[in-house]
Each structure stands twice: as structure tokens, then as C-alpha cells.
Image (tube, rainbow, N blue to C red):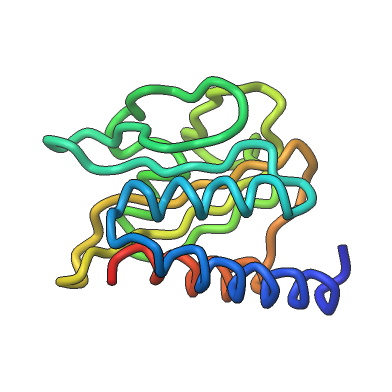
Length: 153
């Protein structure tokens, strides 16, 4: 999808989420809604979900797509890179990423956005995989970072 079309779709999704997320302040409900909307409205989203820090482990929370790894090996893979580097990570080809964790071999590209709580502390990541190479770019980063900010109000 070209960036103009992708931006337009994200803009419409943000408007929809703003309306939907006003119904609750429950973090899990908000995350579930974000996952469902993005997973079904964005082309190429193969796995869409959240991993959260829990006693020093990165544990799966809400997601849509194939069965996920329950716990991600510490300091390994794209999700931990997002936590450790404290920034969004875009990987065009996950097979080229050192230490990539293959929860499903069909995953080809990935974007990971850190999730910060109200105090600004990283508490987890929003992880999206695609079954095609080079799905994600700076447009996805821009809008997904805005969407992740909608979790904690």
C-alpha cells in the first residue's frame, strides 16, 4: 500500500479508536480494541499484539493472529530490542535480525513500538508481524506511536 493510502487509513483508524476508547479507561479493554481494529483493517498484519514486562520477563498479553510465544527470551529478538533501546524498531526482514525469535515461521517483517505508562516508564511493547518482507516503514511508526499513546489516559 502506498504511503498516502496508508496514512489515510491510519487517520480513519485513529478517529475510530478515539471514539471507541472513550467508553473505558481499562487498559486491557483499550489494548484489545486497538489490536482488533488494526489487525482487521491494516493490510499485511499477520500477528498483532502486546508483550508486557512481568517480573523481568516479556510475557504475551492481548493479541490476534497465530499462537504466540508465551514468554520471550530475555534480551533477545525485536521486542527486547524495543525495550532495551527504548525506541520503535522496524525490521524489513526478520531473518536478518540477530537473535530473532520465530514464534511463527511465516513472519517476514516486524515493527515493535514501546508502550509507556502514565509515568512515562516502558511497560511493554506493541508488536506487529507481517508475512511479507518490508511491510513497515516510517509511516507505520508515526501512526502506531500515536495509537500506543492512546492506551493510558
